[in-house]
Length: 110
Image 1 (cartoon, rainbow, N blue to C red):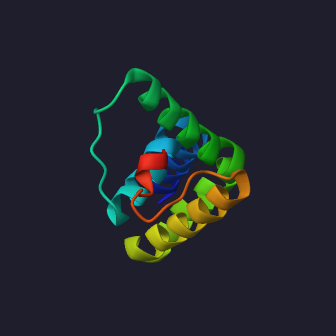
Image 2 (image 1 turned 135 degrees about the vertical axis):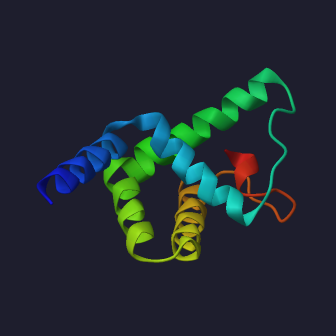
């Protein structure tokens, strides 16, 4: 039982520390709600989307927020976590004044 607990602790520690994994995790949940065509557009647009994703995950949610979302996902459904992530994204969008019209999707702003 101690080995399983140690492995679980190590796995959660890696999830907590590994920054690209946090961003990927949040983008995955935003992608469940609305699909966006990835890989299209100019390089500058892709860089802007990456920067917005980085800011949302690292400045708004931070390690604590992503960690709590992972805990919720572990104990609840994916739908619950996805709804939380989308609500947090909308709060973040309003806070920083991102363009938000009915034709743009959540992931497009990332």
